[in-house]
Length: 222
Image (cartoon, rainbow, N blue to C red; front, side, top):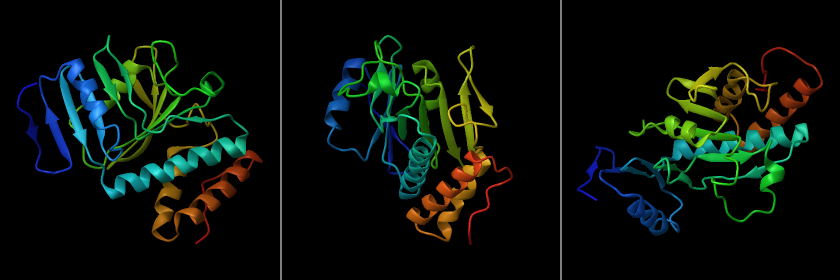
């Protein structure tokens, strides 16, 4: 490992020339410090400590996923920020949040994840409020994550993995076809007027209306 470089923001550190063994050693060192995210891409290691606004968006989007699966009667196994890595690819990351839904039965009861035999999570959340230096979306693609909800300064998008190994933006979620990024954004912004429990309660009402066949944009209560 050679000397690292840090950005002007104290919550990020980038190290170059990091071997796979050194990366796994760092994972063990940070195992009891869940406030950090480690991203590894062929010798480059980025360590980040998320900001409060990042964690709020991640938590609320995560609660939307749970609400959707409950209202639709879908199975769910949470991966949260589990480290997903493949030595052969020399890549690894910790999603902001992740779940198995279509593959939930395969992961039920498991205590460890091994991507050599286990499927990658069906859905991951990636919130980028400070612009990470490494291209995490390319790592998600290499790991085979089918769908990523990506939120940055430009807004929320549904990124869906294509046969060519690249992500493409879609107007509807393959996992939850009844919702759009605009729907979720409506309820994310509702937090400015309501606490999170109230936001999720109103989101559930909206989901039930969609399930019953109602159409039109999301219209939360004031």
